[in-house]
Length: 159
Image 1 (tube, rainbow, N blue to C red):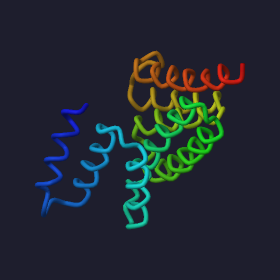
Image 2 (image 1 turned 180 degrees about the horizontal axis):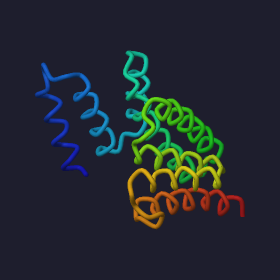
Image 3 (image 1 turned 90 degrees about the horizontal axis):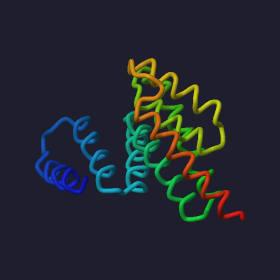
Image 4 (image 1 turned 90 degrees about the vertical axis):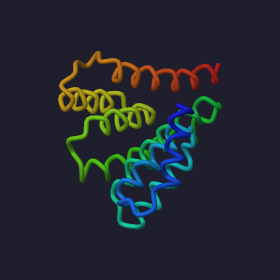
């Protein structure tokens, strides 16, 4: 992932004159690969303010990661707050782009992190249907595991 981040950073430096839609996508990926969740979320907010609805995707991914990080550091209220931010971003994104399976995977994680396991499974079923993959596909399984691991940290912290 560090190699991908370096390649994207170099690409962004040389992107003068490139369609802003592409530059925005590359920048979002740069934040993802370089592990800068808060910057990814913030970048998404800026995009939305500037009329790019794709910014909701960046906000949603960033907020899910920030939620997981908060749970991992023993701050469940912060984790829940970021999960709610993610849910809001994903709802806005999915209002405009209903057929991108990966968005439903991230939406599912946000729902799970907010304690909505039934809704999480519904979103994963939608992702499976859109992608043509089974519910036990590794991406969906990993999403469930990530949510379960984050929430398990809360339980451990309470005992």
